[in-house]
Image (cartoon, rainbow, N blue to C red):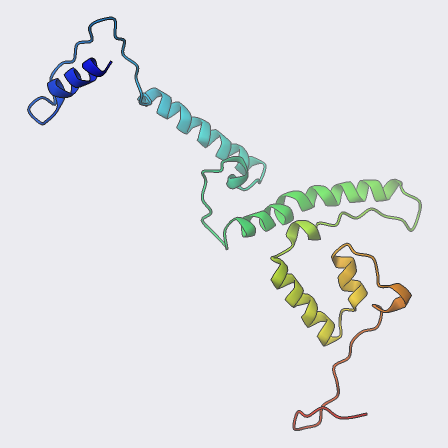
Length: 174
C-alpha cells in the first residue's frame, strides 16, 4: 500500500497535476470517504422532519436534535421551562381533573412540577432566604418545597420576623 500511496502522491500532487486521472492497479479498489449530495440531502430532510415533529408536539427542538442550538431566552434552561409550562402542564391539568373527578369528595390529585422548573441551587436558596427573612415563608414551607420532612416539634413552623427598627434604621431592643 505504501507504494500505491507514493505513486498517487507523486502523480497528483501540485497544481499542475491536480486534474490528472487516477488509475488503480494491482487489485486496489476505490472507497468513497465523503457523503454524496443525495445522502447529505437525505440527512437534512431527516433533521427537518425531527424539527417539524417537535413543532407539532410543542417540544423544544434541542430535545429531539442535539445539534440544534438555542436561539432565545437564556438557552436550554429557558426552553426547558417553556416545555414544562406550555407542553406538559395542559396535559397534566387534564389528568389531574380526570383523577380528581373520580376520587371521594374533598380529595384531589395534583402534579408537582416544581422539581422540573427549579432554577439553579444558589438562586433557589437565595429566594428561600428572602422569603424566610421577609416573613412570608416558614422553614417548614421551604422544606416542603424541597421535598423534605418538617423539622421535629414544630421548630420550622414559626415565621421569622425581622427585628423592629427605629427611624434611623437601628434595631430596637425588647
